[in-house]
Length: 185
Image 1 (cartoon, rainbow, N blue to C red):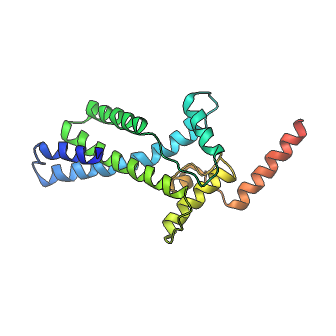
Image 2 (tube, one colour):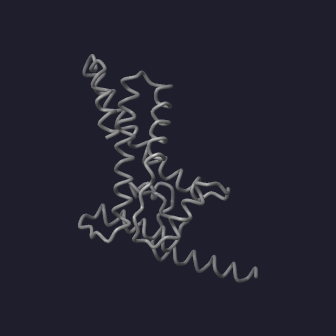
Image 3 (cartoon, rainbow, N blue to C red):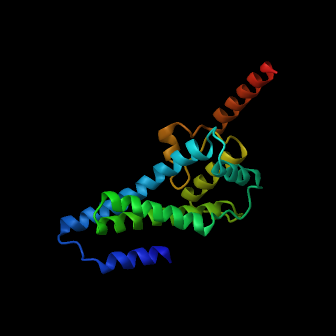
């Protein structure tokens, strides 16, 4: 519903004045989706898995402590608050029509994330390679090594940041870490 409200608000504003303006709006929408993919990895890796103790880390640790197949949906007030903050940030740097377009792209990426995260935590079988890779990466992050596989909506982001080892590499790192831990005890 929130996405529809954003689209309606944008539709009430004057349309792009030229094909160049329309291309600029489309590029803003697409850029905000790409931004989502990178901030998703960054926040998951550096904020939710940070060393600092804070409420978000505690909630995320609780998510990891649950059985893998569980209902996993962020609460609506959190989602709406985050989206509102994102829209206010875009309003500070973009003209109103572009701010709405950026928020539409960002909200679309966020909606995909929430829905996909819910689906990968179910037993729903996935036939496409994209969905299988997404589910496998997330299951590895939960079950094998929570220090890798941080990307979600676009698993290839892990390749860019070196957080997509092969299963054999991850197991080797864990064995090494366990040996080093045993030596210090």
